Length: 395
Image 1 (cartoon, rainbow, N blue to C red):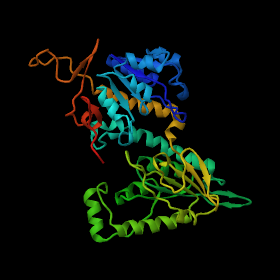
Image 2 (cartoon, rainbow, N blue to C red; image 1 turned 90 degrees about the vertical axis):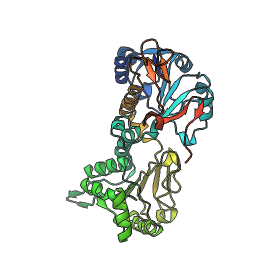
Image 3 (cartoon, rainbow, N blue to C red; image 1 turned 90 degrees about the horizontal axis):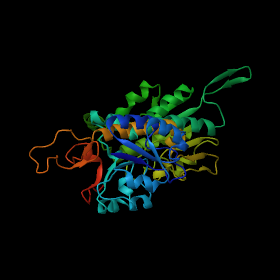
Image 4 (tube, rainbow, N blue to C red; image 1 turned 60 degrees about the vertical axis):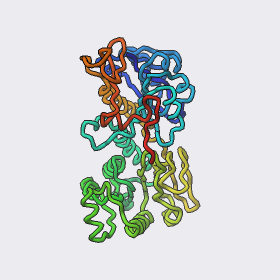
């Protein structure tokens, strides 16, 4: 049974869904891998490296599509590739399902599509498949380096004969995986770091990395409510949101670097920094908007562009930071996909109660079989099309 990989059709995307190391792992599971020539070149994986790992090289993406049972991808497949799909094929990747306009086509063609960003992250057995965490970790690190490159002063404090250079003041908005890595990286570079998040439970994590928590006054009722849910399912009051905005506004007015990380899969990114706050920031300060590709956390940010406000604030629309670390990002992403694909392999034993001697929903290949089980808590959560239907719940 073959797994196929085609070249990304997005100019800003340098990652590849399967790396040579992943080819070896898939081969041990019994799969064959076919990859479009040059698909890994931007991530520094040559065709020769893939061939040495045991993959075969196809001259075109369509040649890959027509001979593969499973197609692994970083982003959604291009329209011509989707047109070439046939019933029974499987697509696995980051499919942006809530804004994907091709799901009806996938369903009509009888394709099973798995959107990896829908993975239930609270499941312990799913942690090694979590593409959001693996990519966000690298993105948080790289975002700080981007900020250091844009900033016209050094990050650490310097003691010189000509005077003392003060450390940069960095504010991180959003303390998820990317935010925590950004805090750790900025601290390693010698900056003074503050951080904010709607989840009060994140305070301990921020402080454990040496950051200062931007504290927002809470009522006793709100405090108990947030503790009861660990912060994750807590819905703050309108007053709390206003109070937090005031605290953040003051911090940003004094900041040299601001990194925003808030993204919600399938939705527009929340607006965290408004024009009124930008107007108060210092000339030469830098904002890295990691959510620029999904609407932006910062008012006025433009994906893949750096803009400068009238008062000299630089806004970097960092739409796809993991692609800037293509080799390592691809390696981690490919490992996530391999771990998920491994769960699709059906038991070798057959079901004696079935009429044809095979288990329900089993897709048989020449050398192994896949079993698609929509009752499984991982498969069922990731499958956005299956059995000629779109399975995505509305949000």
